[in-house]
Image 1 (cartoon, helix red, strand yellow):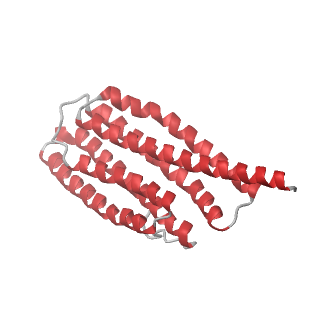
Image 2 (cartoon, helix red, strand yellow; image 1 turned 180 degrees about the horizontal axis):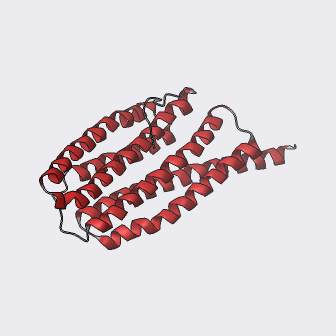
Length: 229
């Protein structure tokens, strides 16, 4: 390969890497927006906004496929090594978690649409807090990935316990509602599902943060004793 071909190949490689970074950032930003809009739809009882979140799922899926294809091209055509190889293979895994975060946002708004058809059961206090934490975990896990920042990744992992605590708190409170009045069971069950979906979003953000350690240090630290769905 002559010098001009080598330079062309290197430029193409760098452009593909930049495209992968940009695509992952855009996908992360979209699922963050889905989380925020899903919670706004719940709190403000905004069914049209809930339906918008569902429509955005197609775009998230498209980005997932596009990023995976870019990763595969990079691996097949350029045979990267070292830190670039770990970045690309980690990117392949991250798109799966981001796509599932989007799926959970859709699951939330499907429950929101049902809840909006009935009188509100209770003020929403813990769920917005859970959503805020989960959304920040998604943002910071992507930032940690882009900056190879293991300290920020560790902070994301630590925040997962707070989401778990709030989920248990919501569960206990809603059990009391259902025990006192069977007529609340349908609404309480939908709220319980929303809490569980937020917990799963936080779990996927934790997965991403744990993969940052692998990318930076070549060492996988994912918690084998925690099931991340």
